[in-house]
Amino acid sequence: MARISPASIERVRDAVDFVEVVSAYTELRRAGVRMLGLCPFHDERTPSFSVDPREKLYYCFGCEAHGDMFRFVQEKQGLGFVEAVEMLADRYGIELEREAEDPKIEAARKKEARLGELLDRTARFFANALWVSDEAAKAREYLAGRGLGEPVLRKFGVGYSPKAWNTIVKRGRLAGYTDEELFDAGLVQRSRKGDGVYDRFRGRIVFPIRDGRGRTRGFGGRTLDPEEKAKYINSPESPMYHKKEMLFGLDHARTAIIKSRRAILVEGYTDVLACHQAGFENVVAISGTAFTREQARELSAMCDELVLALDADPAGRGAMLQSQQHLPAQKRLRIRVARIPGGKDPAEILAGARPGSDIAAEFGKLVDEAVDLVDFHVEVLLDAADLETPSGRDRALDEIVPVLATLGDSIQRDDLIARVADRLDADPALVSRRLSGSRPGQQAGQPSRPANRQPVVAMNRAEQLEFGILALCVAAPSEGRDFLGRLDDALLSSPMSRRLRDWLIDHLDDPLAGAPRDDEAFHSALTSLVMRAGGEPATREAMSMNLLALQEAALARQVAEAVAAGRPDPDLQRRLGELRDRIQHMR
Image 1 (cartoon, rainbow, N blue to C red):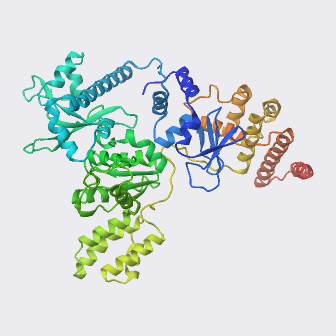
Image 2 (image 1 turned 90 degrees about the vertical axis):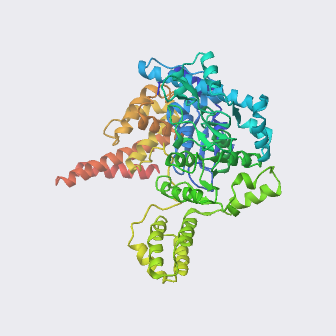
Image 3 (image 1 turned 45 degrees about the horizontal axis):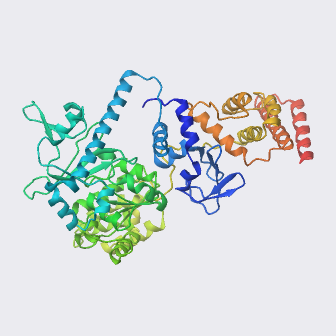
């Protein structure tokens, strides 16, 4: 990824309303110069999440999540730093400049941008064709018959691809694109003879597949010809389109998913459209029936709960059960299953439904009453088992035990053990014994840190004191300069504390200005200091007490080292006792 110029990053930082960004995840209220709210990184009832609107930093006094606005977007949306900057730049209309880069990387970036423009142009052409082309009348009739109105079709850019074999080829060439570029964008196929290309999508209703930022990455096309073998075709794997990463409708569903902390996953394009039309805006679709680890990671960064509302046919059930394997890597994402009745799909249930209608209310009830994925998995295995013979019940238990093991010790597991034993006509103790002999999986429903979150490293008492006085120095620079000069290496046990001290000596007035972003650990520690500074009692007395405590810790280390070496030093012990008396007197 190309390096964005520091000047561009600062322009983005200046333009972003950080309170607006954070407010999509938690409600904030003013508390002095800061904003306070419930932490969006861990469950809590008492607000401990602090946002500095001016410096655009955040800090949680509960779980210690912290960083700047770029880090916040990275963690909440599962993005890298460059992607976070690009997303915010798009949102606030900032044009990014990039520094000189490797010619190969620059060429690849320019190629991707050009292919992206080609895909967006083509999506606009298809969308327009659906409404103005006489040839598309059958497509409009079909969509209306599915109960899909014009507003939702236009919102998602649903279009129509003409039947001619070279419509996109000719339009692309006229716009200055080469056949190779059309092929790389997944819009054309090569002829078998190898002497030309022809349109990939012909005579189909076309659904543009966009990423979370609204950029067209590919298309899905549904045929209107009952004789056509392939009912649906998608763009092929390409530099622009990676099927396992794509979630149809994410560009329109992202905000609703974040606000509700829940995503609803369906199977098809029309399922998404019908749901959004009925008022369920937190709905996205997988491409086909495969739910991938990449899709789970994307959703886990935005919500806590995923409700699977897939078709009730064998393929849909298989996708639901397959999602179980993604739980170990995405523990934070609770997965539940909505029981879709009568073998229908959501589009059939919600055909023509509008927000607030009885049909929409009934579908909402199905979602709210969704069962836990493990419960669903166990039920499917039991329903498919031969429960009439002892050997059949044994085989069923062999399949069920690994599923139960994913729960770890929990009330839910105990309840399932009882239910399984009842269905198998077995002693619950037998199920428990078999379960205790299996290798337990990681526990479902356990909170986990977002993919990009740096682990919170527990600090010992000395390190806590060191960070405390450094935070005080940041909070009161005029006093802090004097105390920074007294913090020699003997008082600072942590290499990170020494690095922070050295940086603050030269940057105390604006600690984050020019801080090296390529050193993530340092930048994270510095950000934490700046945010902690706002909550510290920044007085000279507090700094003096912290300094004395550091001196006490340093002397205690020296005394302990002398004793461990078999050479106790009475003078060191005397000085330590005097220092402790002084500290007690000051307190």
